[in-house]
Image 1 (spheres, rainbow, N blue to C red):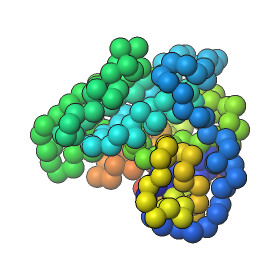
Image 2: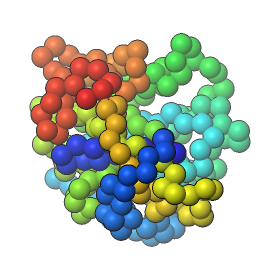
Image 3: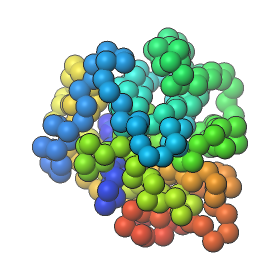
Length: 241
């Protein structure tokens, strides 16, 4: 179950619903980074922007794919991950300890159900506590991967073109089973490559112009005269584009 966000320059994928279309199959099977042991690959963090320009906030529970997800986005230029482990059994800290030790991950564990919506509560806490430390902050799930059309381009260098916006809206592409009856060995990226469009969006917000969360975890409130837009310039006022 996986899903992808797609714009003119950025795509995100997540595993979510079964769709048999072979869109981008060749590109996605060949372009993502193969996963080596932690620290053995070169990150694309070097950019003209500040090293802490782009961070990701994650609310997660019981998902062991977190290592692949962190490693992938770190290589694409994300310098910091705020991982809020929402009552995983067992806690996910052991899986991400090497990233904690290197200062890449800030890890928090909660045993409370924060009503009315734990994810929105976590997103607001993350933005309030850490937003000032970063120019951009992404709010995506562990089954969503931000994919650049040019695999040699990092995410912060793309975001540099959208500093005037309240946020950047990334449209999903939805991935299904890709023909697998059972989950095969190996990572998410290499095994799932069949997808189709989806109107939902996820957000990378410009922390300077962002007020906070809304009642939907996909969209955010922005200061007056600022909005989220797609990379194609479409103004997005909700969780759909």
